[in-house]
Length: 330
Image: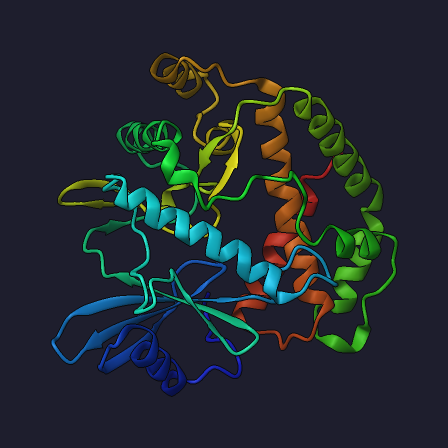
């Protein structure tokens, strides 16, 4: 995220690091990287660098009425699974450092989940297309290793329920209900945008639901999945490729990690089938392609239904929302 969350002071995080991990912090600096979580670089009294991640649990709720405790439970399960993967020998997994109590993260007040990571030196990348075939193949190799991980590594993992987070807010707004115009500069704009494109939203949701029904008829294809293995969640280190941002880990069909990896020529799909003996299914690939767009649209709508100030993050979210709406079926 480009801006720090309101109501979260650096001094409070220093206290959490001391209580949760026993760190004596000498420096803490916000890093405007990624989009979704908030990040800080931390230096302790021994000069060791760390990477701190804070997730706003309000934004991780699946629906308006879901309690933050449920969102925290999903986050905890995902990060605990990342720790299990690392402990099983998956060196490419950048997992959180356990707290003094052995937990993958700390819940701070009602609103935030705080996790501490080792600082990783290496080449970082941005969201978008893979810059080289070597990069793409390197990530595919990691995905194959993840999908064939020992069963013990999935003991904490939750299963994908195929739900679209914030769907209730998306449907309300598409029907021109529920956006309170006083909430922020993009509230009325969002209401108008969704009202004008309500039929496209309904068509995409209907296609999603039809595919989910079809896929539920094929049980038994669940593997551990990262969920977002795009270039921005990869790094090239002296030891090789690694995957970061494991907060989206779920047991799910393998296509959850594959739809965005294939460049469109079937090469990744074929290589995955050769490596694992599992042939990815076109309907499931389509489901996760559709779900990605729906989840992003719904998340941005949820953001603008609530109070917002017009920050740099709001500006970026509005641009992304307009782009996604522009791709809806006519």
